[in-house]
Length: 290
Ligand SMILES: [Zn+2]
Image (cartoon, rainbow, N blue to C red; front, side, top):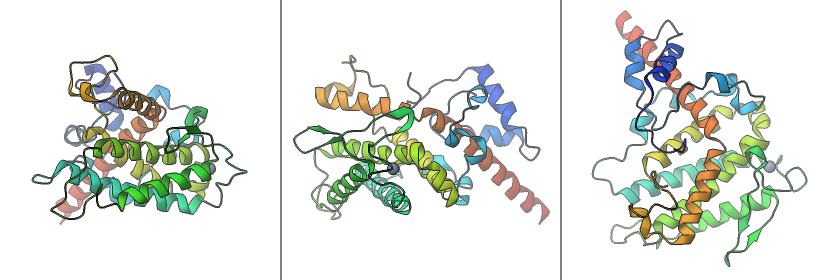
């Protein structure tokens, strides 16, 4: 099963390893662990043996978050509120992710030029092609790609027929497809920053923002089922069978792309659980002292 899909069960041994690992901190009780383990939708088994990578963003010391996300309950953050329409909830979140990623990239735009980034690359040398209105794949530089992506998304987000702001307007039938397309573009932008510009982000001390954003973004797309979780190309027995072949191919490609940063997601999810448990232990200590 894919790392990004929901895991329904986890081996007892692996669970105990993770628990032991999290309990290294004296301040955190086993109750903390039990309370917080379910908050991130898809946390992989212990990854202790797989983090000795030279890749900067996979190093523990850089896998840190902004204070606000360390102290918040991600499970609550990504849960669709009762009485709020699902599309409304997705639209609200997509707008937020777009604004944050756009702002973060703007800081780096002087470093991401046609000469430094002549192709739009992501982790493991993956190459992202721009697809024009006629469906033609185009190879372009990273700044060209990101500029086109941001312009495309800005246009969609400000189109009241697609992202309605009035109560008497409904979301269009193509909403799911457009959301998946935007999720894919947003992921490409973040993946490019991780792969090429993470060192610059550390120099600006902005890496906690990208990590917070990435963890929130991936957790949200898993939880909201933007990418059907049990999807398989040959599976005709689920609600995905109403998708056209091109949509199915697109979903398969998107899942494969997400996989290129699955190790990062696992690392961040684990680090966040620790940070959140620590923040809560601290809060409890302060309450007890009062
Ligand atoms: Zn670049």
